[in-house]
Length: 280
Image (cartoon, rainbow, N blue to C red; front, top):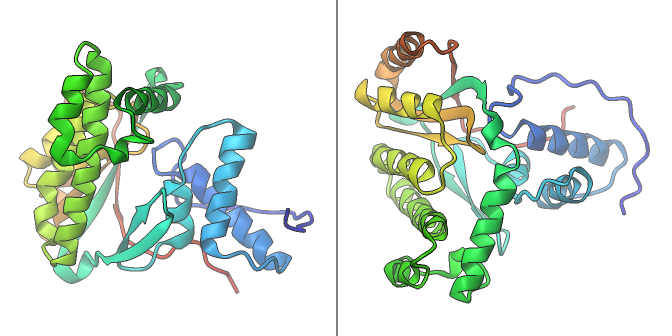
């Protein structure tokens, strides 16, 4: 409904496409931000994120949530974004890695397996089926403390049991990470990252051999923790390391890929930074 006209746009980016790093959301948000400035639409960052999600849902046909677009539009330097996707409440949580002598490495496996085609919609449908079976609006309404009771209700459908267990425990892991970041205990989130990967691999079943190899190798080489990120079946993993260990951990992962006969991964540091902003 915004009165935007046309534009000739040229894009340049350091975000690799197809790597599970939300390059599509970045493209949507930077386009909307440019048009917002060009035509003086006065749209706030969160509203831009909502419109970009609608573009995915209604025009592309991908039933995605709003996390990626909100991150691209609303993140702040040196912080992680804590997002409640139901209430659209945002909180910036201190996550200044450089100040603590830490690095967050991104390992782009440079693979994308066909198994991932349509998998997002399938996983979403399973989550919705689990919520219906439990009589709740969404799986976020299943209390972590009552998880075993919920899983007992689903006994007999092992797929739903695994999907529900992943979502409920993953939400709890998010809460634990935020609690530790708020307390300044950044290093202690490492094992939570690794536990999250195990859940993605075993219960949500969206990992792959290359991602598993990254996590296993990085942890064995001294990383504080690691996990896949993005939609899965390829793409990238993130690895939390001491700054002094970044090079050796990256080298171990690269050597492990070579030994397995995989294409060399792309490894680079990610710095918590601001979302889309006006360019003078």
